[in-house]
Image 1 (cartoon, rainbow, N blue to C red):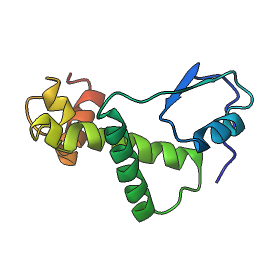
Image 2 (cartoon, rainbow, N blue to C red):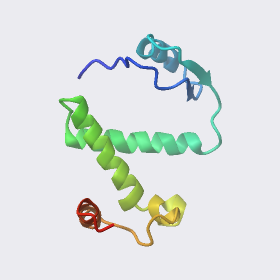
Image 3 (cartoon, helix red, strand yellow):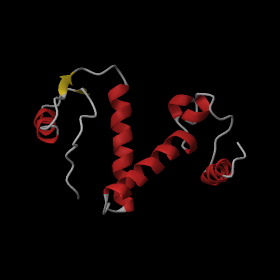
Image 4 (cartoon, one colour):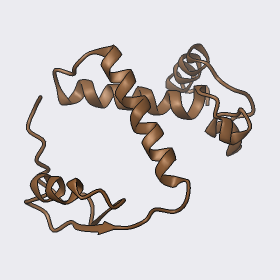
Length: 126
């Protein structure tokens, strides 16, 4: 892995649940920033959703293997974000994707749809 020490402060607060090990890790990773660690009982149901997202990312990244660069990790996360928001149906959204549920798209898209739309956009068609 590469060193993960942010040279710039990118956040002011970091809200976590009450797990005690977070405090030590936050102090270690954000030692060069003035990040305030807020321990809170998260809104009911929110913690489960975040934990599910992290579990999905962990499983998917194990299948993909380790990342040899920060750029490789960023590419993976960006691809997963697109998959999560445009391709993956969510039970909590009545089987719709977040893009459908928010009205951004009318229909569920697949990767081919997204590639075609990106190509058309790059050519100036919309």
